[in-house]
Image 1 (tube, rainbow, N blue to C red):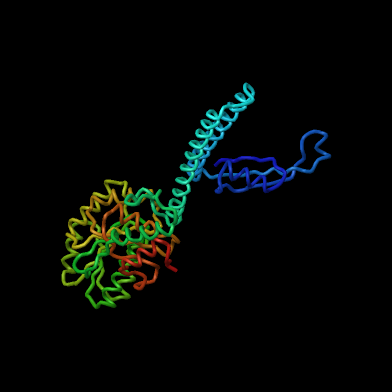
Image 2: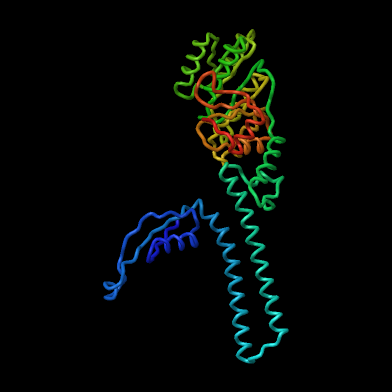
Length: 372
Protein backbone atom coordinates (compact mmCIF):
# COMPACT_ATOMS: atom_id res chain seq x y z
CA UNK A 1 0.00 0.00 0.00
CA UNK A 2 1.23 3.49 -0.91
CA UNK A 3 0.67 6.13 1.80
CA UNK A 4 1.16 9.87 1.27
CA UNK A 5 0.64 12.92 3.45
CA UNK A 6 -0.47 16.32 2.14
CA UNK A 7 -0.28 19.66 3.97
CA UNK A 8 -3.03 21.79 2.39
CA UNK A 9 -5.19 24.83 3.04
CA UNK A 10 -8.48 23.06 2.34
CA UNK A 11 -9.92 19.68 1.35
CA UNK A 12 -10.44 20.67 -2.29
CA UNK A 13 -6.69 21.17 -2.64
CA UNK A 14 -6.08 17.80 -0.94
CA UNK A 15 -8.48 15.96 -3.26
CA UNK A 16 -6.98 17.59 -6.35
CA UNK A 17 -3.44 16.55 -5.40
CA UNK A 18 -4.54 13.03 -4.39
CA UNK A 19 -6.31 12.41 -7.68
CA UNK A 20 -3.37 13.73 -9.69
CA UNK A 21 -0.68 11.77 -7.85
CA UNK A 22 -2.50 8.62 -6.72
CA UNK A 23 -5.56 8.50 -8.96
CA UNK A 24 -9.27 8.27 -8.26
CA UNK A 25 -8.87 4.91 -6.44
CA UNK A 26 -7.03 6.58 -3.54
CA UNK A 27 -8.82 6.91 -0.20
CA UNK A 28 -8.42 9.28 2.75
CA UNK A 29 -7.47 7.41 5.91
CA UNK A 30 -7.05 10.39 8.28
CA UNK A 31 -7.12 14.17 8.49
CA UNK A 32 -6.23 16.70 11.19
CA UNK A 33 -5.70 20.42 11.59
CA UNK A 34 -2.15 21.67 12.23
CA UNK A 35 -0.34 24.99 12.51
CA UNK A 36 2.44 26.15 10.26
CA UNK A 37 5.89 25.84 11.85
CA UNK A 38 7.52 28.83 13.56
CA UNK A 39 6.18 31.79 15.47
CA UNK A 40 4.38 33.13 12.41
CA UNK A 41 2.26 29.99 12.40
CA UNK A 42 0.28 31.28 15.39
CA UNK A 43 -0.91 34.26 13.36
CA UNK A 44 -1.89 32.27 10.26
CA UNK A 45 -4.99 30.08 9.62
CA UNK A 46 -4.55 26.43 10.51
CA UNK A 47 -3.56 24.00 7.76
CA UNK A 48 -4.94 20.49 7.19
CA UNK A 49 -2.75 17.37 7.20
CA UNK A 50 -4.43 14.71 5.04
CA UNK A 51 -3.14 11.13 4.88
CA UNK A 52 -4.16 9.19 1.72
CA UNK A 53 -3.53 5.60 0.65
CA UNK A 54 -3.64 3.49 -2.52
CA UNK A 55 -3.79 -0.32 -2.50
CA UNK A 56 -1.00 -2.15 -4.33
CA UNK A 57 -3.55 -4.08 -6.40
CA UNK A 58 -4.66 -0.78 -7.92
CA UNK A 59 -1.15 0.56 -8.48
CA UNK A 60 -0.77 -1.05 -11.90
CA UNK A 61 -3.82 0.80 -13.22
CA UNK A 62 -2.42 4.07 -11.93
CA UNK A 63 0.92 3.39 -13.65
CA UNK A 64 -0.83 3.48 -17.01
CA UNK A 65 -2.22 6.90 -16.15
CA UNK A 66 1.18 8.06 -14.93
CA UNK A 67 2.81 6.95 -18.18
CA UNK A 68 0.28 9.03 -20.10
CA UNK A 69 0.91 11.98 -17.79
CA UNK A 70 4.62 11.62 -18.50
CA UNK A 71 3.87 12.17 -22.17
CA UNK A 72 1.94 15.31 -21.30
CA UNK A 73 4.82 16.45 -19.07
CA UNK A 74 7.20 15.78 -21.94
CA UNK A 75 5.00 17.91 -24.15
CA UNK A 76 5.00 20.70 -21.57
CA UNK A 77 8.78 20.53 -21.34
CA UNK A 78 9.05 20.73 -25.11
CA UNK A 79 6.62 23.64 -25.15
CA UNK A 80 8.67 25.46 -22.51
CA UNK A 81 11.83 24.81 -24.52
CA UNK A 82 10.19 26.32 -27.58
CA UNK A 83 9.10 29.31 -25.55
CA UNK A 84 12.68 29.77 -24.25
CA UNK A 85 14.04 29.59 -27.79
CA UNK A 86 11.54 32.16 -28.99
CA UNK A 87 12.40 34.48 -26.08
CA UNK A 88 16.13 34.13 -26.79
CA UNK A 89 15.58 34.88 -30.46
CA UNK A 90 13.46 37.86 -29.54
CA UNK A 91 16.26 39.14 -27.30
CA UNK A 92 18.71 38.75 -30.14
CA UNK A 93 16.43 40.39 -32.65
CA UNK A 94 13.44 42.52 -31.89
CA UNK A 95 11.98 41.59 -35.25
CA UNK A 96 11.85 37.77 -35.68
CA UNK A 97 11.38 36.66 -39.25
CA UNK A 98 8.02 35.38 -40.46
CA UNK A 99 9.63 32.11 -41.58
CA UNK A 100 11.00 31.39 -38.08
CA UNK A 101 7.64 32.04 -36.49
CA UNK A 102 5.90 29.72 -38.95
CA UNK A 103 8.41 26.96 -38.17
CA UNK A 104 7.83 27.35 -34.44
CA UNK A 105 4.06 27.18 -34.93
CA UNK A 106 4.39 24.00 -37.01
CA UNK A 107 6.43 22.33 -34.26
CA UNK A 108 3.89 23.29 -31.61
CA UNK A 109 1.04 21.93 -33.75
CA UNK A 110 2.86 18.61 -34.25
CA UNK A 111 3.39 18.22 -30.51
CA UNK A 112 -0.22 19.14 -29.75
CA UNK A 113 -1.55 16.62 -32.27
CA UNK A 114 0.61 13.90 -30.72
CA UNK A 115 -0.69 14.59 -27.21
CA UNK A 116 -4.33 14.80 -28.40
CA UNK A 117 -4.00 11.50 -30.26
CA UNK A 118 -2.54 9.71 -27.21
CA UNK A 119 -5.15 11.26 -24.92
CA UNK A 120 -8.01 10.08 -27.17
CA UNK A 121 -6.59 6.56 -27.24
CA UNK A 122 -6.31 6.55 -23.43
CA UNK A 123 -9.94 7.62 -23.05
CA UNK A 124 -11.12 4.86 -25.42
CA UNK A 125 -9.04 2.25 -23.61
CA UNK A 126 -10.40 3.34 -20.24
CA UNK A 127 -14.04 3.19 -21.39
CA UNK A 128 -13.89 -0.48 -22.40
CA UNK A 129 -11.39 -1.60 -19.76
CA UNK A 130 -13.45 -0.11 -16.94
CA UNK A 131 -16.56 -1.87 -18.21
CA UNK A 132 -14.78 -5.24 -18.51
CA UNK A 133 -13.37 -4.81 -15.00
CA UNK A 134 -16.85 -4.05 -13.73
CA UNK A 135 -18.34 -7.24 -15.18
CA UNK A 136 -15.22 -9.28 -14.26
CA UNK A 137 -14.25 -10.31 -17.80
CA UNK A 138 -10.56 -10.75 -18.64
CA UNK A 139 -9.64 -8.16 -21.25
CA UNK A 140 -7.12 -10.45 -22.97
CA UNK A 141 -9.88 -12.96 -23.78
CA UNK A 142 -11.83 -10.45 -25.86
CA UNK A 143 -9.23 -10.73 -28.60
CA UNK A 144 -11.68 -10.69 -31.52
CA UNK A 145 -12.56 -7.04 -30.89
CA UNK A 146 -10.36 -3.96 -31.11
CA UNK A 147 -10.99 -2.42 -27.70
CA UNK A 148 -9.39 0.89 -28.70
CA UNK A 149 -11.83 1.53 -31.55
CA UNK A 150 -14.90 2.32 -29.43
CA UNK A 151 -15.95 5.87 -28.56
CA UNK A 152 -19.17 4.73 -26.87
CA UNK A 153 -19.56 1.83 -24.47
CA UNK A 154 -22.97 1.05 -25.98
CA UNK A 155 -21.30 0.24 -29.32
CA UNK A 156 -18.87 -2.12 -27.60
CA UNK A 157 -21.67 -3.85 -25.68
CA UNK A 158 -23.55 -4.49 -28.91
CA UNK A 159 -20.53 -6.11 -30.60
CA UNK A 160 -19.58 -8.03 -27.45
CA UNK A 161 -23.12 -9.39 -27.18
CA UNK A 162 -22.90 -10.80 -30.72
CA UNK A 163 -19.52 -12.33 -29.88
CA UNK A 164 -20.93 -13.94 -26.73
CA UNK A 165 -23.89 -15.40 -28.58
CA UNK A 166 -21.57 -17.09 -31.07
CA UNK A 167 -19.14 -18.41 -28.46
CA UNK A 168 -21.54 -19.71 -25.80
CA UNK A 169 -22.47 -23.36 -26.24
CA UNK A 170 -25.23 -25.01 -24.20
CA UNK A 171 -25.43 -28.80 -24.02
CA UNK A 172 -28.95 -29.99 -24.78
CA UNK A 173 -29.35 -33.71 -24.17
CA UNK A 174 -31.01 -35.95 -21.63
CA UNK A 175 -28.95 -37.27 -18.75
CA UNK A 176 -28.71 -41.05 -19.07
CA UNK A 177 -26.18 -43.68 -18.05
CA UNK A 178 -23.29 -43.02 -15.68
CA UNK A 179 -22.73 -39.36 -14.88
CA UNK A 180 -19.62 -38.31 -12.91
CA UNK A 181 -19.11 -34.89 -11.35
CA UNK A 182 -15.54 -33.75 -10.70
CA UNK A 183 -14.04 -30.51 -9.40
CA UNK A 184 -12.15 -28.77 -6.60
CA UNK A 185 -13.18 -28.86 -2.95
CA UNK A 186 -15.98 -26.52 -1.94
CA UNK A 187 -17.56 -25.89 -5.33
CA UNK A 188 -20.82 -27.62 -4.38
CA UNK A 189 -20.57 -31.02 -6.10
CA UNK A 190 -22.57 -32.89 -3.46
CA UNK A 191 -25.42 -30.36 -3.44
CA UNK A 192 -25.40 -30.35 -7.25
CA UNK A 193 -25.62 -34.16 -7.28
CA UNK A 194 -28.62 -33.95 -4.93
CA UNK A 195 -30.31 -31.36 -7.16
CA UNK A 196 -29.80 -33.48 -10.26
CA UNK A 197 -31.05 -36.59 -8.45
CA UNK A 198 -34.20 -34.75 -7.37
CA UNK A 199 -34.79 -33.35 -10.84
CA UNK A 200 -34.34 -36.72 -12.53
CA UNK A 201 -36.27 -38.85 -10.05
CA UNK A 202 -39.05 -36.51 -8.88
CA UNK A 203 -39.68 -34.48 -12.02
CA UNK A 204 -38.50 -36.63 -14.94
CA UNK A 205 -39.57 -39.88 -13.17
CA UNK A 206 -36.34 -41.69 -13.99
CA UNK A 207 -34.84 -44.45 -11.88
CA UNK A 208 -31.76 -42.93 -10.28
CA UNK A 209 -28.87 -44.40 -8.30
CA UNK A 210 -26.26 -42.51 -6.27
CA UNK A 211 -22.61 -43.37 -5.67
CA UNK A 212 -20.13 -41.35 -3.63
CA UNK A 213 -16.38 -41.76 -3.31
CA UNK A 214 -16.14 -38.57 -1.23
CA UNK A 215 -15.27 -40.24 2.07
CA UNK A 216 -12.62 -37.64 2.96
CA UNK A 217 -14.91 -34.73 3.76
CA UNK A 218 -16.67 -34.91 7.11
CA UNK A 219 -20.43 -35.17 6.68
CA UNK A 220 -20.38 -35.59 2.89
CA UNK A 221 -21.55 -39.21 2.98
CA UNK A 222 -24.28 -38.47 5.54
CA UNK A 223 -25.46 -35.47 3.55
CA UNK A 224 -25.92 -37.45 0.35
CA UNK A 225 -27.35 -40.43 2.21
CA UNK A 226 -30.02 -38.18 3.74
CA UNK A 227 -30.99 -36.86 0.31
CA UNK A 228 -31.13 -40.42 -1.06
CA UNK A 229 -33.45 -41.54 1.75
CA UNK A 230 -35.77 -38.56 1.25
CA UNK A 231 -36.01 -39.25 -2.49
CA UNK A 232 -36.14 -43.04 -1.94
CA UNK A 233 -33.26 -43.84 -4.30
CA UNK A 234 -30.45 -46.40 -3.84
CA UNK A 235 -27.16 -45.11 -2.47
CA UNK A 236 -23.67 -46.67 -2.43
CA UNK A 237 -20.45 -45.59 -0.69
CA UNK A 238 -17.26 -46.59 -2.49
CA UNK A 239 -13.69 -46.58 -1.18
CA UNK A 240 -11.75 -48.94 -3.49
CA UNK A 241 -11.75 -49.56 -7.22
CA UNK A 242 -13.20 -53.04 -6.62
CA UNK A 243 -16.10 -51.55 -4.64
CA UNK A 244 -16.74 -49.12 -7.49
CA UNK A 245 -17.06 -52.01 -9.92
CA UNK A 246 -19.48 -53.80 -7.58
CA UNK A 247 -21.59 -50.66 -7.00
CA UNK A 248 -21.97 -50.03 -10.72
CA UNK A 249 -23.11 -53.63 -11.21
CA UNK A 250 -25.68 -53.38 -8.40
CA UNK A 251 -27.17 -50.22 -9.91
CA UNK A 252 -27.12 -51.35 -13.54
CA UNK A 253 -30.93 -51.35 -13.77
CA UNK A 254 -31.03 -47.58 -13.07
CA UNK A 255 -31.67 -45.11 -15.91
CA UNK A 256 -29.08 -42.74 -14.44
CA UNK A 257 -26.21 -43.32 -11.99
CA UNK A 258 -24.87 -40.12 -10.46
CA UNK A 259 -21.34 -40.32 -9.07
CA UNK A 260 -20.09 -37.80 -6.50
CA UNK A 261 -16.29 -37.59 -6.37
CA UNK A 262 -13.84 -36.25 -3.82
CA UNK A 263 -12.80 -32.64 -4.24
CA UNK A 264 -9.17 -32.56 -5.34
CA UNK A 265 -6.64 -29.80 -5.73
CA UNK A 266 -5.98 -29.34 -9.43
CA UNK A 267 -2.30 -28.74 -8.56
CA UNK A 268 -1.91 -32.15 -6.89
CA UNK A 269 -1.09 -34.51 -9.76
CA UNK A 270 -1.15 -37.60 -7.53
CA UNK A 271 -4.69 -36.88 -6.33
CA UNK A 272 -5.85 -36.14 -9.87
CA UNK A 273 -4.34 -39.44 -11.07
CA UNK A 274 -6.14 -41.31 -8.28
CA UNK A 275 -9.44 -39.68 -9.24
CA UNK A 276 -8.85 -40.49 -12.90
CA UNK A 277 -8.43 -44.17 -12.01
CA UNK A 278 -11.90 -44.21 -10.38
CA UNK A 279 -13.47 -42.42 -13.35
CA UNK A 280 -11.89 -44.88 -15.79
CA UNK A 281 -13.24 -47.80 -13.75
CA UNK A 282 -16.73 -46.25 -13.98
CA UNK A 283 -16.46 -45.86 -17.76
CA UNK A 284 -18.71 -42.80 -17.42
CA UNK A 285 -21.06 -41.76 -20.19
CA UNK A 286 -20.65 -38.13 -19.18
CA UNK A 287 -18.08 -36.26 -17.05
CA UNK A 288 -18.94 -32.75 -15.88
CA UNK A 289 -16.45 -30.35 -14.32
CA UNK A 290 -18.05 -28.33 -11.53
CA UNK A 291 -16.66 -24.81 -10.99
CA UNK A 292 -17.91 -22.16 -8.58
CA UNK A 293 -18.98 -18.82 -10.03
CA UNK A 294 -16.99 -17.18 -7.23
CA UNK A 295 -13.66 -18.62 -8.46
CA UNK A 296 -10.94 -16.02 -8.97
CA UNK A 297 -9.97 -15.48 -12.59
CA UNK A 298 -6.34 -16.31 -11.90
CA UNK A 299 -7.39 -19.70 -10.44
CA UNK A 300 -9.57 -20.71 -13.41
CA UNK A 301 -6.51 -21.53 -15.55
CA UNK A 302 -5.06 -23.79 -12.85
CA UNK A 303 -8.32 -25.69 -12.35
CA UNK A 304 -8.98 -26.22 -16.05
CA UNK A 305 -5.42 -27.32 -16.72
CA UNK A 306 -5.32 -29.76 -13.78
CA UNK A 307 -8.66 -31.42 -14.51
CA UNK A 308 -8.09 -31.53 -18.25
CA UNK A 309 -6.28 -34.84 -17.65
CA UNK A 310 -9.65 -36.45 -16.80
CA UNK A 311 -11.16 -35.44 -20.15
CA UNK A 312 -14.32 -33.79 -18.85
CA UNK A 313 -16.94 -33.02 -21.50
CA UNK A 314 -18.89 -30.04 -20.18
CA UNK A 315 -19.12 -27.50 -17.38
CA UNK A 316 -21.50 -26.97 -14.45
CA UNK A 317 -21.17 -23.50 -12.89
CA UNK A 318 -22.38 -23.23 -9.29
CA UNK A 319 -22.88 -20.60 -6.58
CA UNK A 320 -23.94 -17.87 -8.98
CA UNK A 321 -26.20 -16.60 -6.19
CA UNK A 322 -23.07 -15.75 -4.18
CA UNK A 323 -21.66 -13.17 -6.61
CA UNK A 324 -22.83 -9.93 -8.20
CA UNK A 325 -20.78 -10.20 -11.41
CA UNK A 326 -20.88 -13.10 -13.84
CA UNK A 327 -17.96 -12.44 -16.18
CA UNK A 328 -16.29 -15.60 -14.88
CA UNK A 329 -18.83 -17.55 -16.98
CA UNK A 330 -17.26 -16.09 -20.12
CA UNK A 331 -13.74 -16.62 -18.80
CA UNK A 332 -14.50 -20.30 -18.09
CA UNK A 333 -16.20 -20.89 -21.45
CA UNK A 334 -13.44 -19.15 -23.39
CA UNK A 335 -10.60 -20.97 -21.66
CA UNK A 336 -12.16 -24.44 -21.46
CA UNK A 337 -13.80 -24.40 -24.90
CA UNK A 338 -16.54 -26.60 -23.39
CA UNK A 339 -20.32 -26.48 -23.33
CA UNK A 340 -22.36 -25.43 -20.30
CA UNK A 341 -24.53 -28.24 -18.95
CA UNK A 342 -26.14 -26.52 -15.95
CA UNK A 343 -25.92 -23.47 -13.74
CA UNK A 344 -26.75 -23.57 -10.02
CA UNK A 345 -28.42 -20.48 -8.57
CA UNK A 346 -29.02 -21.30 -4.91
CA UNK A 347 -29.15 -23.95 -2.18
CA UNK A 348 -32.68 -25.25 -2.71
CA UNK A 349 -32.89 -28.92 -3.72
CA UNK A 350 -33.92 -29.71 -6.42
CA UNK A 351 -35.10 -26.31 -7.67
CA UNK A 352 -31.99 -24.14 -7.94
CA UNK A 353 -30.39 -25.77 -10.97
CA UNK A 354 -31.22 -25.41 -14.63
CA UNK A 355 -29.97 -25.61 -18.19
CA UNK A 356 -29.75 -21.93 -19.21
CA UNK A 357 -30.45 -20.43 -22.61
CA UNK A 358 -27.84 -18.47 -24.57
CA UNK A 359 -29.85 -15.31 -23.99
CA UNK A 360 -29.79 -15.82 -20.20
CA UNK A 361 -26.02 -16.36 -20.14
CA UNK A 362 -25.40 -13.30 -22.34
CA UNK A 363 -27.50 -11.06 -20.10
CA UNK A 364 -25.78 -12.35 -16.97
CA UNK A 365 -22.29 -11.75 -18.36
CA UNK A 366 -23.19 -8.29 -19.66
CA UNK A 367 -24.67 -7.32 -16.31
CA UNK A 368 -28.15 -6.82 -17.79
CA UNK A 369 -29.67 -9.36 -15.40
CA UNK A 370 -28.79 -10.67 -11.95
CA UNK A 371 -29.50 -13.76 -9.87
CA UNK A 372 -31.33 -12.63 -6.75
